[in-house]
Length: 218
Image (cartoon, rainbow, N blue to C red):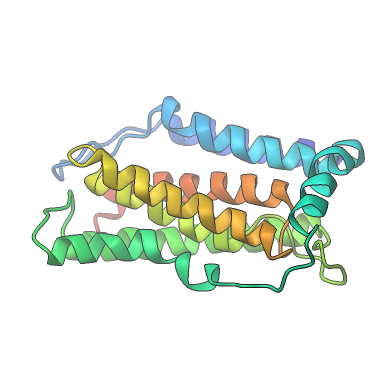
């Protein structure tokens, strides 16, 4: 239970600190971080953390989902190793096709690079902290899912760049990201809680980079 409290405390500290900052530089986009923008990722991270920290919830949620996903004894088909990059890769593809994004090529590269660093830090830090065993056993770095995290921060960047004008693109990006998470469970690589937290950390990583953009000024 102490792990859960520590995880939630860290998240709460980040959320309260970031929400108080505002956009101080003009760069053609509202980079301020509104409290409403961190509600969804906070709930996802908190849900995953609570399940991981509770043996009871683990046995009632993680284990049944894992057993159901492996009921047929199927072979692993780890296409998500590639699909995880599809949401982010869609941004430059659309830009090359003539659809104007909210940011320039240089800014997009900075956003993606920063989100990569943040998500890697979240992923490795919490993997080391929780030491959650993977469903297939023997490896203790299950929480959170790095693949899911990558897919969701890519989907969030795609949404912010094109979602206002083309909402269908944003929905498609998030659908692909959700599919990556489902495949990680299907291939017995992660528990359901790992996917929830990975999605939350992915969205949070992208949101923090959009908030930090004016201060870094690319």
